[in-house]
Image (cartoon, one colour):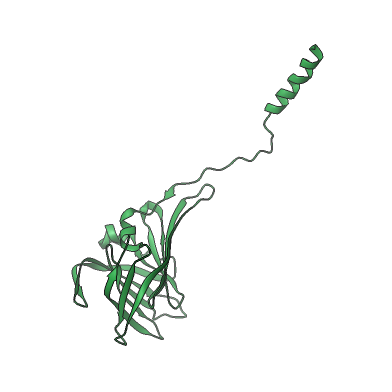
Length: 212
């Protein structure tokens, strides 16, 4: 009896011993969240559509929210946890919208145009401080806010409080590239101009239906 107890105690103590090679998990950094107001300008659900007029040809074509929105939080060790949202569209204007959380709540909207270019066209700083908007582009281009229009008439529709931004290319392969974007809350992109050495096209919104 005593011998059995003597053997059991060392085994119990050994079982409580923490192995020296057990990994130490690093804690995640701050959360880079996407502000709700930014989603109101940029994120839409299935059932949403936009019909644009190509001002170069006079033709109209529809853009529909095709897949998404998708959402994820990307964690890593000792670095920010970044929220991301995106959706895909069947559109003559753009193929994908991507919304990325950033430091100090400065979320940024990336657009993938039909020529497969990915670029910034709107930041949260622009929505809250349009006069102080700075260059926040992750690509070799200069992003800026051109202003806020109290009301803007487009194709017989009046839009209130429209944000206008631009992106000028500094890439040596296409130095003439220029994008100009007009946004309306709860409607999204209402006018978009894309200029480059090969093309110059403007799309303007005619009709729409959005679901958020």
